Amino acid sequence: MQRLSVAVAKAQFSALLTRVESGQEVVITRRGVAIARIVPEPAQPPAAFDLEELFRFTDTQPMHAGPDAGTVLSELRRDARC
Image 1 (cartoon, rainbow, N blue to C red):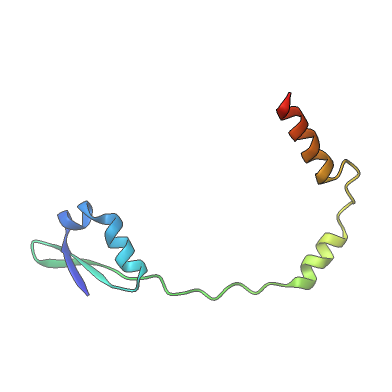
Image 2: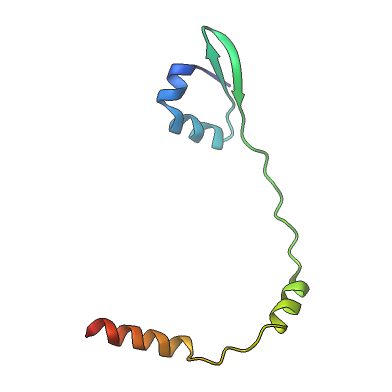
C-alpha cells in the first residue's frame, strides 16, 4: 500500500490510477493523516448472455430489402475515386 499526499496524488493522478488498476491500494493523506483510500474495483463476472433470447429477437426482425454490403462498399469506393 502506498501513501501519497493530496498534492502528489493530484500531480500524478494518471500514474496513481495505473497503480490501482494493477491491483495496488493507495492512501491519500492530508498533513500526514489518511483521508481516502483508492482500491481496485472488484472484478465483475460477465453478465449472463441468453443466446436463445437473441435468436428470438433476430428472428422477428424484417429482412433487409436494399443493396448488400458489398454493393454499398463498391459504390462508396467508386464515388471516392471521382
